[in-house]
Length: 638
Image 1 (tube, rainbow, N blue to C red):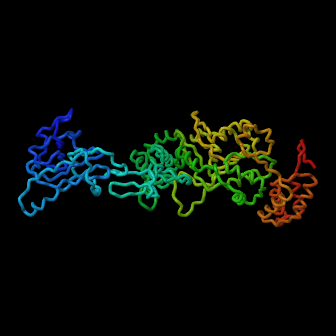
Image 2 (image 1 turned 120 degrees about the horizontal axis):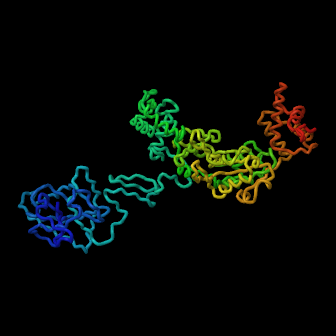
Image 3 (image 1 turned 30 degrees about the vertical axis):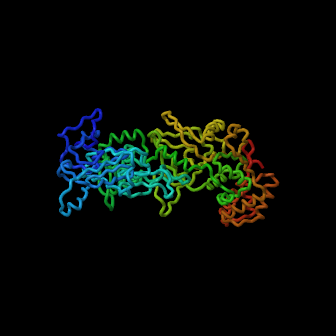
């Protein structure tokens, strides 16, 4: 179908359409004939071909300023009879582009309605290109064409020289997303749709919590949002059914910690592949979740290959990048812990002022601290109280995925889940909401335990201790008594303490970098000068000596322990203990001794059928069995 253009020579590379290609069944409005002067036309003007008109009709091109044609019902040609018509008022869309499809013809003149003689229609003079158009109020946004509407067949370029339309004017059929702040919209940008409605959308960091907000894993609604592939979830489903024999759909979703809608789609795909079959319903209710699934004989070979790769049977893992992002948002660094806040977090533990002043700044930094001093004076108990001073709880994944290898992180012995609150916001159940962990390792620690532990039997990894202590506290107790030498152990910790990253090794030999967001504490009762060197002391900025209690503090500890054990405190009996068994023998005090001696006195009272109490007889009996020195030949010294 040809289109109309100004009279003139054809542009290079184009030929004028012959008469056989003209559509005489359509008429053109005056807007489609930008002639230079008004007056009757003896013949239709020559047209300027538009690229693409020879091809099948498609969506029109969208230059900055276009005026679309208008279609009238079939009738006599506009060139045979023209009647005067007022110039069409230029219509402007918000972006300078107007697309009107199927608009009804303008109403006839009054004389024609009244039955008067018809007038000859003339074409108005085209507006000059050097003069701006008269101001006209922009009409309402045009409705987009429906699926059955005819696309415009003629497009006339009516661009005028001048600045381009402002970017703030959206097109009538486009969707605009404003990313910048709006002075009149403090809540955030809006998204405008083609229907004229608008809704609030997130800023460019959509999906990311605002800065300062806590990490809260959103529940995935689709398989893509979970970050896992369909084959990974299918393998987990097949292994879950294999180990259980048969399972309901809801039990499979609960085992994988994935939404039921996601698991149902995977189950349906496995059923179409003939790997599983439905045995029947498993209870009241309708839907795939109540159906009981079992494996078919077609799954035997596939399941053998899956179990040869790994035998992990548990919640679906999260991706490594998702876990790294969660660690950064739940960091233990940069806390704001005060003395008043710390005093309520240590329970019945009696802490001196110098200890508060030493551990407070160290916890605010999140860096390592080194405890040293004689044994039995509360170094481990202090660390257990320190972890309670940190803010809130954290989310720990059941397992993460590293290069298609599953690494299990959550440990029900080390991690203490938080009780669910009524009406709490839902979250991804592949994560466990826990208190900040305190992981204590002692003399059993080896270098191999500080790397990924791969089990050839189950063919998946167990996370090392420092990885399980992420966003929490790691205490290396009895430092210097491990099977590995202190020098080798300290060399292993130098890089993580310096750069906050740790390098782990897969059994394939590949190195993996993971965050080291751990508050590390080292505790020893040995001589520090024989254990550590200057390189280690430089990276452990805070050192604190835990001293022995004096006589007054010894009384306070004894009173606290009597209250906890339900025994009446008697200061005279405690003073008898000090004067009889400590002062004459120059025996040093230790913070653990009141607890140990009191427990022995309670055991002896129960043995004699008496109620537990403080007495001189029980004190003497407890001291005889508690304080024993041995000579080198193994015989007790007097």
